[in-house]
Image 1 (tube, rainbow, N blue to C red):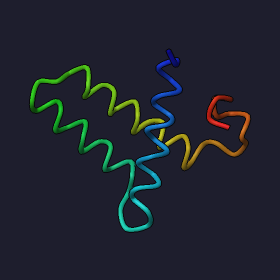
Image 2 (cartoon, helix red, strand yellow):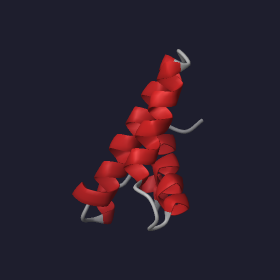
Image 3 (cartoon, rainbow, N blue to C red):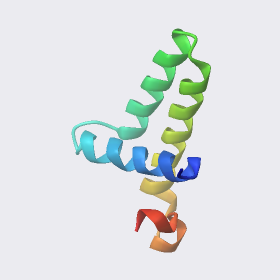
Length: 73
């Protein structure tokens, strides 16, 4: 079984790739978070909030591959 952080980063990469340049992937992830929260799915809402934060890191704060978990390389 993979570490939760790895799954979060993989999903973040999927969201980034699926959005392309037409939409903001971080906004997409936070929208999914909001939808889950509205349905009372708190664990899934937290997961999507973590994905949104990972997207932010991938798009703004990570400047070197060594910051991304090695299993994603």
